Amino acid sequence: MTAATLDRPATSARLLSALQVVHWRNLPLMAGLCIAAILMLMPFLWMVGASLRPAGEAYRLPPSIIPREWTLAAYREALGSGIPFVQMYWNSLVVAALSTLGVLITASMAAFAFARLEFRGSTPLFLTMLGGLMVPPALTLIPLYFGFARLGLLDSLSALILPAMASSFGVYMMRQFMLSQPRELEEAALMDGASYWTIFWRISLPQLGPALAALGIITFTTSWNNYISPFVLIKSWDKMTLPAGIVALQGLMGAASVSVVMAAATMAILPLLLVFLVAQRFIIEGMTMSGLKQ
Amino acid sequence: MRSPFMSERASAYLFLAPGFILYLLMALVPALATLAFSLTEVDRFTWGISFAGADNLLFVLSDRRFWTAFGNTFTFIAMAVAGNVGLGLLLAVLIDRQMPRAVLYFLRLAFFLPVLVATALVSLVWQLLYSTDLGILNYYLNELHLPSVSWLTNSRVAMVSIVILDVWKHVGFFMIIQLAALQGIPRSLVEAGELDGAGFWQIFRYIKLPYILPVVLFCVTYATITGLQVFDSIRILTQGGPGDATISLVMYMYEEAFGAQDIGVGSAAAFILLAAIAVTTLVQWRIGRRMVAQ
Image (cartoon, rainbow over the protein chains, first blue to last red):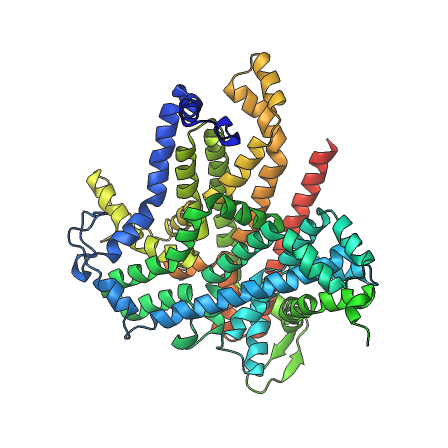
């Protein structure tokens, strides 16, 4: 993006170029943007601050971001046995991990068929799957509820995982990536008598690392943040996942529990935040790619 | 026996099967079932199904509450699209210049972090910020000698409060997409304008904006389609209230299907939602084609 990112000159030269890219007339603008950015972060800072305050101080005004008294009591209570928070955390992890794994495997396999193999019905089948891009999740919720009820899967983690594994977008995205890959290597392997499974597993898939990572991030985050599906499909605490579960906890515990709810929300956001700090650029690219789906 | 993975056609169907069956069972069949439900009267206890024709649709279309939800959703969309896409474009234009990498990293972090986290969880935080008596927003308003605002309990203000949360949550997404578009403009175009003596505003208005207009249009469509499905934030902040002042289309659908237990009516509402999404997509496609033709 900037000249400084293109190569790696010696430290002094790097410092010089870093100074050069600061256009001094941009300084007031940069300051303004940074103030706006801090305002954007305020709700998060306040959330963490409230989680570290003693219960009685949660509503103290003026609101100080940095609590006067630090305490981890809210975290202890959230992680204690009185609240099903740890169970919900585990459920969220299982649902997100299995959904992601399922999407990565089934979508890349289907994409391989559409991008590389010739078979009767290829085009109509692909168009059928593309139609799924327009179907909003809310539209399928009513039949899924009654379907799962009849199968005895209502109020189970499967009711959250199975629908999340069906990803038109994943198939479409992986197909686009595969089409942009050179196929010489695959053709050579075919001539050498390799099976299509070997070609897929040993040659195509390893080239798709970045695409798989992007799709994985999108799927994991979507599942981790999903509120409406568990809200409709899950009834018992030991099957609940985080966002819907924390909202239900807040309703159950009432206003006195602000610091506990904020501690739970902080812990629910933490893994996304940590990954984001490390792989910021990559995640932004992956998430904006999901915008292509419409 | 020869492995089926040696034959191209057999492999194709095997690769396709898992993803396609999932798509069929979890997306396509439920979507069609919604259509079927909307034409029938389902007795939830005996599973007796009788054909109801257009009765459900006519009921929805004559239900004043539906039109309230319809109007609310479009008010929300009008404000949220303007806020998200407009503010996102403004931020993108401001950030699109040479900056030290650390500043750019911080800005991207601050504006994109809300995009990454669950709407349900940040709604819990904003609920506290918006609190009339104990909320932080009113505290600072009072400090500035301004009267308190009933952010969530005044029917004229509540939807605006929801839009503010929505713009805070999503503006980073629209900023990043439009920033990428701005950075894709060939330098020679901008330099030619500069040589002709065009100012900052003229370069933006006559060179940059026409170039990125398709991306802006995409953002408007995307924001409209996600706006049509608004649910999480409203459900947590106002539960559709006060009265029905903030009830949205998806909320109406949810309450009819699961609250009032009228599957047919809920499904009919879901289909109106799909129709609205289809119309939005179609309009974007038509406008996009005209833009390309010019």
